[in-house]
Figure 1 (tube, rainbow, N blue to C red):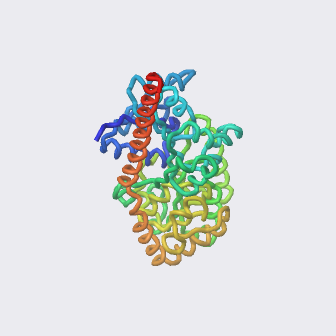
Figure 2: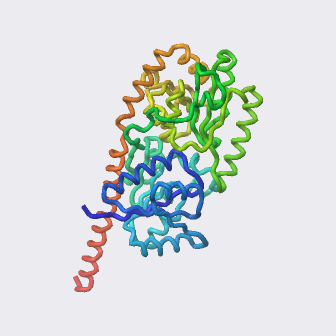
Figure 3: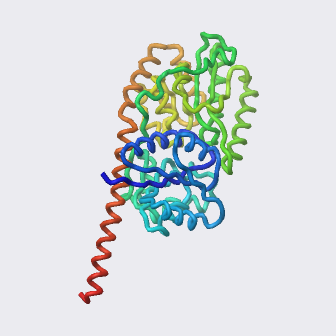
Length: 390
């Protein structure tokens, strides 16, 4: 099969669940005959993340980045480009370079692009339509954004996990690290400090649980990025830390940064909580389910697609920390039910394999390449007919 040189426009300022999924996806595509070249608007933690995993990353510094990127795409003989963030530079560069563009829209535009001006946010879905040959949505709620714009371009491809990811493995003992009792029940949340992740709901729920279960301990895995989003994230983290202190949880709730692989530490948790109602397809929930952990999540967005409440987890109404707390206490009081939900969750996410996702992404990219070649051939035929006076 013909090799494809795929350019990927990446987020340069940090690495979260999306970047971990994309790294797995690109590695799998590389094994399927793709040559991967990543491009970024600047250097940062995100670019270092991909380089550390063996991907070439070219940084497009300076003004007129779309023009500079178009030149780089031609120079590197890139066949197609996939954008992985909410920013149109790569799509514009593809128009200039005359190559296909695929937009991986992995979330709700109004939520996932909070640093963009409101007017730009309202136009993003239209830009995606105008500048893209195909749109990949990772859930039904994301695909629905384009129902009135370009539904014929949208392909729904859920995120995927590498086989075995999320299972317990070697990791620091969290209870020992924070001098907690070895028998203390542990409740975990994993999310970088974006406001829409609703860490405050987790803290309030933890305070409610701790009032009735003083033996319980809590941990948040997350961090902040650089760039414009990073400033917003730092403010969010500061609010969460103040709330933790105000609720008397400073010695019972730990904030853990810089852990790329949560497989081992997730195995130490008794319950996993995800309070954000505005997620499209939360990778942290997927990984917790793959680790066999019972998940309590806000019953909205992608969580409602991932979890069947009472069967593979528990869904509660969004923005109700009191109900989050009640659900946590229910599972801590009934370990058998918690184990049953966790086991069912692990079985349910087996269908989300990275190989299946990569195969479907491959079909999308090769499909837009075939469509471009077909259009080019048709154009040449029309031009030839015109020259012959037909």
